[in-house]
Image (spheres, helix red, strand yellow):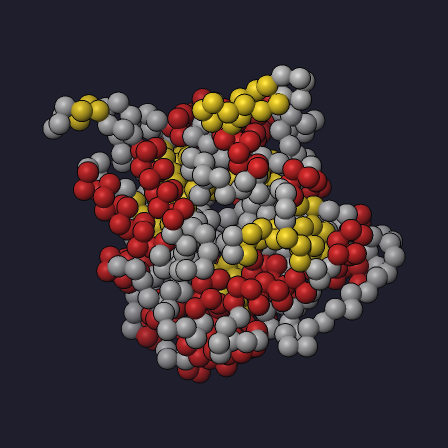
Length: 579
C-alpha cells in the first residue's frame, strides 16, 4: 500500500452534521436528494424504503434473501437504480431506467413505429437510446415515390422533441441517446449537429464587447435560458465504430478523418462520444441513455443496481454483496412493468443485469492508492466478475428462467452516488467541494456540497483539502483516465458510463495541438473499451456540477439557493455531466 499525498498535513476538521431520521446519509444534501426524489408514502425513511423494496422485488421469488438484501440497501452497500427507488411501494412498477431501441427498417412505417416506441418508453420514466444507422443518408433517391430521403437527423430531432414534451413518469426530464455509424453518409453532419454557436437566431444580434454587434446564436440563448429549445438538446450523441474501422486503424495507424473530427468535437464541445463495438460485440450498437447497457436487440431494457465499494471493508463482504445484488436484479426481471409487449419478449430472451460499481475512487483513496488499477483492486474485480455470473446462473436455474446474456454494467450513478456520499461510478472524485444545481418544478436551485469521500479524509486523517486528487487534477493526464477505464472494462461484460473531465478548449492542455495525440491515445485503447465521452470545462450551459473552494462550500452547507442567473456563467468554473 502506498501513502496518499492527500494525507500529508492539513488542519483536522469535524463534520458534525448527522440526520436523526436517516443516519446512513453523510451530509444534508444527500438527505435532501432522498426527500426530494425518493421519499413517499410507506418509504418515509431510507431504512423503510430499503425494507419495502426488498419485500416487493426479492420477497416473492427468493424469500430467504429478502432480509439480507434489505440490510445491504439500508447500509448503502448496494443501491438499486433510481427507478427502483422511485417506484418502491407504488402501484406501478416501472423499475427499469432505460430502453434500447433500433431503427430497424428504412421505411415510413418504421419511422412512425419508432416514435410510438420512444413515447411509450419515455412515459414510464425510463430513458431511451436509438441507433439510427439503418436510415439512408440525406438526398438519397426514394424509388417508390421519386422523392429524396431526409436522412436520419430529422428523425433524431423528432424524437428529441417528443422527449421535450414528455415529463418522464410525471416526475423528470427525458433522457435520450442517439448513435450513427462512422461509415454513414451523414456522419459529418451528425458530428456537427450540436454546433449551437454556429446557429444564428434569425434577426437577433448581441453586443460583441468591442462596440459592435455579432449574431445572437442558439448557444447564447441556451446560456441565458437553459430550457431554450435547441437541436438535440435532450439527446446525448455518439458515433459507432466497428471492426472495419479497427482493422483499418491497425493496418495503417491512421485513425481516419471521421475519428479525428469526432475527437476535435469531443474536446471542444463534449459531443459526440465514441461507441466501440468489436469482435463478438460488433452488433451491440444499442445503448441506454447513459450508454452502459449494450444490446443488439431492439426493445431491450436495462436493469440497474450499484455496489458501493466505499462502505465495504473486506473482499469476503464484497463477494456477499455482489451475490445479493445479483439476486436482487434477477428478481427485478420478473416483476417490473414494461411499456409494450416486445420489451417483455426481449427481456425474457436476454435478461440483462446491470450490476455496477460506485465509490471506486473512494475505495482507492481509503487504501492510499492513486487513481489507477492496482493488484488489490484487480482481485476485487475478479470477485465482481466471477460471483455475479455464478450467482445469476444459479438463481436463474433455481427459478427455472433463462440465464442472463450479460451481468455487469457500470452506470454513472450521479444522483444515487451523491446520495450515498461517495464517488460516482468509476469516476474520480469530481472536486473536494462543488455546487450542484437541480430542477425543482421549473426553477433551477443549487446547494453547496462537500464530497463525502473528501470529507471523510479530512475528518479522519486531517487531510489537506487542497491536496486531495480529483477529476480536475486528472484533467491534464487523460491517458491515466483512459487506461483506468480500460482496465476496469476487462471485468465488465457490457459497458461503463464514464466522462473524462478536460480543461476548457483553447487552454494550454486542451487545444488544436492536442487533438491528434488525444485521438491516437484513445485509438490505442479502443479495442478494450465499449464507449468513451469527454467533458471540456464550460462546454455546455447548465452544467450540473461546479467546483468551488472548500471553505466557500463549508460556509454554505445546508442551504438551498434559488438560481437567478446561470451558475456557470457567473463563476467561470467548470462542471461535469451527470444524472
